[in-house]
Length: 293
Image (tube, rainbow, N blue to C red; front, side, top):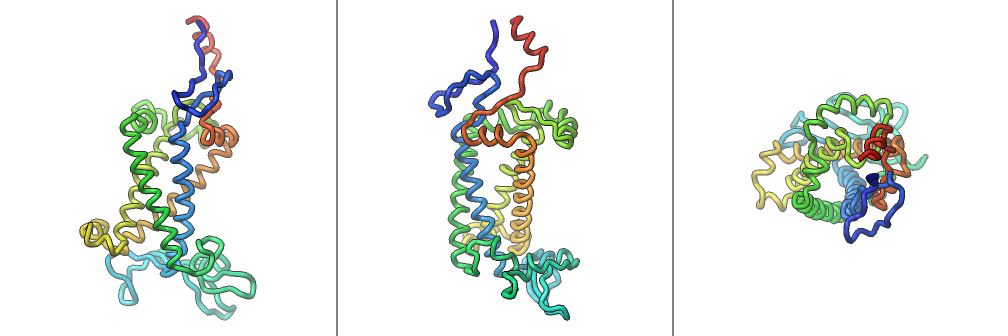
């Protein structure tokens, strides 16, 4: 009896049945919904966060900051030079000219001193109050959805079944790295080792750390969680960690998009929009085994 390679949708699924045995129902409606909620929330949090950062475009390590301290690790600013105003970015004491993008930017002839440019912030004009409202609104959407997803995934076994790396996954890690470097992708139902590690790092390390450092920076949380600032090394350190996590999330997004384009954008987008995903055809040995079963 010939086995069917296609996976049928679960009860209540909105996905239509398919006769293509290589087309499986990989992403549930819940997975797709949370994916897009997180993507939209992080987009607005990023751009509004950059607007908030522009109010003080410096990062420090420790509990204190200001002219009397030498703990600046990152700064964006502008200075007057013989060639006119120039923007700069300083990282651990090393200064780079970033005129036109960071520190000094704007339409030609109407540039202004500004940390991140107007096209990268919400709102585009300087409005700290609006930026904070947008930032916190989408932050609470992200936190609420993340908690619900975590509880549901623990109950239905999604974390254990699909995201937790197994011993066999770790053994395949070197080969997965080589395959990705060669842009050689295997389209299967299961996530590969690098995907599990990347998604797990975002869901269980970066996003929780983003939330925790965000709470540590909130003055209203000092009375509720007074130990949080000390645990993170001070409010300024928490702000630096918060910014660093943002950079790592942006890097993950860029790599994620590049992998989608390299692996086949139509197939990958169909999976996260409709739930259906086309897997690789079975190897000749697999087909022979299926027909003899």
